Image 1 (tube, one colour):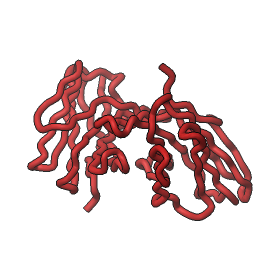
Image 2: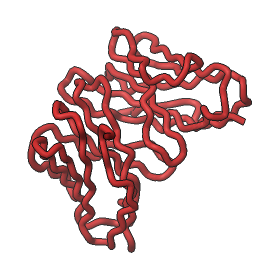
Image 3: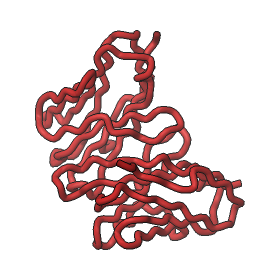
Image 4: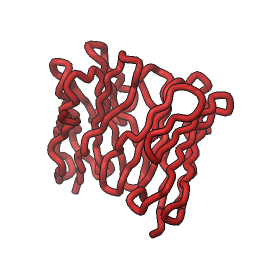
Amino acid sequence: QKEVEQNSGPLSVPEGAIASLNCTYSDRGSQSFFWYRQYSGKSPELIMSIYSNGDKEDGRFTAQLNKASQYVSLLIRDSQPSDSATYLCAVDNTGGFKTIFGAGTRLFVKA
Amino acid sequence: GAGVSQSPSNKVTEKGKDVELRCDPISGHTALYWYRQSLGQGLEFLIYFQGNSAPDKSGLPSDRFSAERTGGSVSTLTIQRTQQEDSAVYLCASSLVGSGRYEQYFGPGTRLTVT
């Protein structure tokens, strides 16, 4: 079992819709969770971090964490073509010592 | 403020040559990471530096790879006797570990091509 699992996609949504990206992790001791966006040919860019159960909202983005289910998700409201990218889920239980990245989900927002 | 910088942005080298890749982290960040990303693949952890502690080299794929961090700031990743399978984008990230927040901020990467 991979430590951090994401559906590789592509996930295709129409412009204006909600995109839902999901991630599961295997280490129950994980404490820190991150979502990164990576455009083709570019480096990963941090979108959200979440450290406690529940929802965290930042603009059009909402991160949701459920530690009991070992599940973290990212919702993108009012999706735009510019949101088309690969989204990486990252999980850490080492206090920053070694963050584990998922392989990413490709999102395609159709205009 | 300035982000993580890396140089060169692109490097083409012949098989068997040595290369040095440089990373300049965000000022004040205590942790520095190197990753490798092959085309269409995920991030592969290479090495981690935190303050003055011994680096975690567990991700280095072979003894041809080495890295150092001078003065707790700039880091250099060295690949000796490059092979074609070393071709990838090498990403550096830094983090303010110890603050209770562990977000990593990435540089633009160095694209290495071994011919």
